[in-house]
Length: 610
Ligand code: N2P
Image (tube, rainbow, N blue to C red):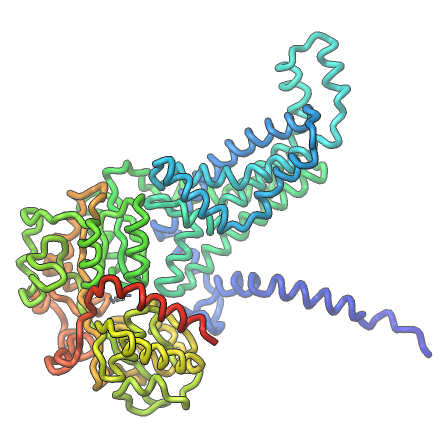
């Protein structure tokens, strides 16, 4: 036998490489694609810094980053001060059952974040605190305090108490001893704790998403909401900046813990902090007071940033736009009670349910002169007779978009159950829409509350599940465009935009009939800025603005005055404005009261079936 050659990598080394590759490959891809010219992230099309420029110009990203930094700074000061005091106390006091107390300090570090998040929301609600900046800082202090205590205590472990005793023997008061002896000796530990707290605060998502409320959108929350309204390479650039800043700060903290002097970590620390300082220089928008702000909660892909920006300029206000992808998400937010939205966009059945729960504010028509632009066909409907609470914003159809070269011509819901297309089908992630599609396919009403009909629809969806690639209500048109699926259930506007980009994509409202939606703008009962909310409602009903919204989003506008301003390519596009006979075979989803629970249960069962 020959001795193993030294040059051959051992199995251990290969395994280590595999582990590191597994750990870091996604990050490397993310960073690399932040420099990729291609808009659709799938393939490399050459180097560019364009996405960083886009991110730097994006006022919403900059504002979110600024919120993140302010929250992280406040958290750092509070948690580090309290953590240092606690660590000193622990070090001095010899407590009974010391081990238990020590353990209790570290428990929050290993507690599932979601548990902490839910308990904080409950606590804040019990205390009557409104969700906002303040609650985010409190929550961040709550989860980062343990880090601070642990890091400062580690430093104190090697601390020689006789130095403090010597100082006091020489006549120094306890306070002077603290200032001139103790703190300088443990300063690297305190700084390391501060950096660690800062970095856990700056990129927290789970806890923040529970306690943020409006106006306290941090960068991680903003990035997530961008992901939901469509992937863009700008997100890679944002994430790379956040990643680089965090790595630099953690590196500095680690070196300090290893005994380096603060001066020796000045470079990584300075670089990390200045990356995060950019928005203070680049976003000239002042931090606006609460009454100069409007909080809009709307469907994703439902309003263009330019439309919002024009309103901001006209009224000298800042508009926060948060997005959702289901009526159920909107209702849950409204019911949680302590959020400050001024304008929301419920569908018909959700208007009914919110009115029934007393969650909407009666509108003041004197502030809505442009309501006269709206086609009377969309007014006074069953969901809100007299439009006391809502004004129509968009309407449209649910249908199927498909790649004709792959699946031929489609005209029935049955195509979504065709086993030949296994793994190439996308369905909306929505109880009423998916059960609705199955009901329509079987010739039943989408508003049925008959248990036998619903059981039939549920069985169909369970049988369909193995064919379905994804349930997606946000960027379903992108999944079709990318070629990942060939058939998708979805809403007309986003499909119309996809069709404009790819002639192989077609849209059909199935012959068995389908769902028609009418989504309205409304003002929640507790809206903090009702006057500005009315100004916004009236603004989007102006003919030019309604036309712009329709042109950019390609959902169907109920604004009669806007029609004349639309190009023929939009006005005559049957995917955007369906013909009367297509409309005649659709049904509007109604509020079905108590049976809603049944729909939700059936749908949850479908998604968890195997
Ligand atoms: C917008 C979806 C349209 C809403 N992303 C259908 N009610």
